[in-house]
Amino acid sequence: MTDDVIYHGVYRQAGGSVILTETPDGELTGVVHHVVKHSPTGIGWGYAGSGAADCARSLLIAALGDDAARCPRCDGTCRVVITGNERERPYDPAADADIDPELVADCWACDDGYRRVPYQEFKFEYVAGWDRDWRMSRADILAWLARHGVTA
Image 1 (tube, one colour):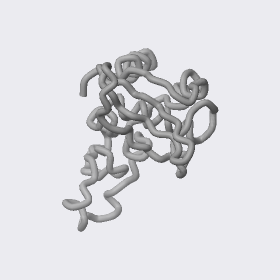
Image 2 (image 1 turned 45 degrees about the vertical axis):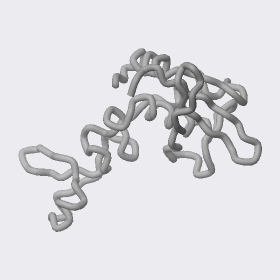
Image 3 (image 1 turned 180 degrees about the vertical axis):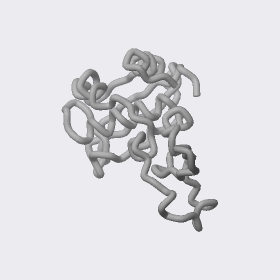
């Protein structure tokens, strides 16, 4: 993923809000997936509620990209296998189906399979103040994350 992605929030009266991905020239390249945590009904902005929290979290995860956003401890499975001598590895549902359940633990380091990101801070600093239509570059989001101790 390149830094020249532009995130474009569009409020659609009938269909809810959507975040498009575009080139700097405005060419549509995709849509940001809603990573549900607080708002099962969708993302939003311009206020400080649950939809705005999910908007912030979804944007930060999208900007990091799949590999960098995935929890490094559990590899996105939310579970780890204790292998002995205080060592562990990510749980693999296919390979570990018959493993002793006592050796499997919940991952305490992640947020639903993703690394923890300061999305509430991003929400208050940016998302809560956005109007119906807004744009922000991936480079700006990554710079914000770096200032908050998160690197891709």
